[in-house]
Image 1 (cartoon, one colour):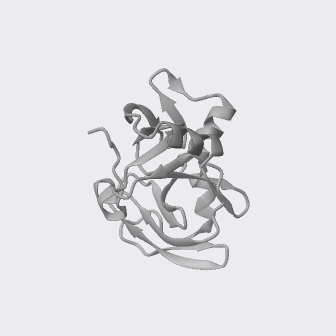
Image 2 (tube, rainbow, N blue to C red; image 1 turned 90 degrees about the vertical axis):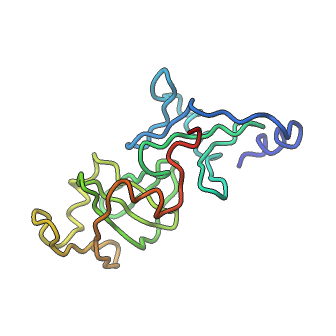
Length: 173
C-alpha cells in the first residue's frame, strides 16, 4: 500500500466505502462506467493498493476510501510473457503454480502464490504449448508442464470457482 494511502487512512479513518463503480475484466482491465481506465499512473496506483478483506471482498484503497471491485471472473488475471513467465494484471511476477483447471467454456484457471487467477484468453493459444494430453476429448487427462513442474489440469464449473477459492465476485450485492 502506498504511504500516501496509509497517511490518508490515519487522518480520515471512517470514510464510507464505494461499490458498483470499479470492476476487473476477464482480461485484467480496470473498468469504470465510462470504460477502461487508460491512464497508466492510475492503473498502477489501483494495482499497488488492491487487496482483499478477510471475507474475500476485493477492493483498492483510494486514500481513506475502500473502493470495492466487481470481478468479471477471478480477483487476479494472468498474462503470459513468453517463453515461460506469467505476470498478474497488477504486474506481480508468478513464481510457482499449485493447480490448474479448465472451465466449461475452455477458460484456464491457475492457482499460484497470488491465489486463483484466470489466464487472459489472448494468451491461451500460446500457453497451450505447455499442456500435454488430448484437449479435444472431454474428460481426457491433461498435464501442465510449466517451469519444471508438472500439474494435472482438472475441470471446474464457473459457478464453483468463487466459493471454492473464497472470494466474492460482486461485493456490493
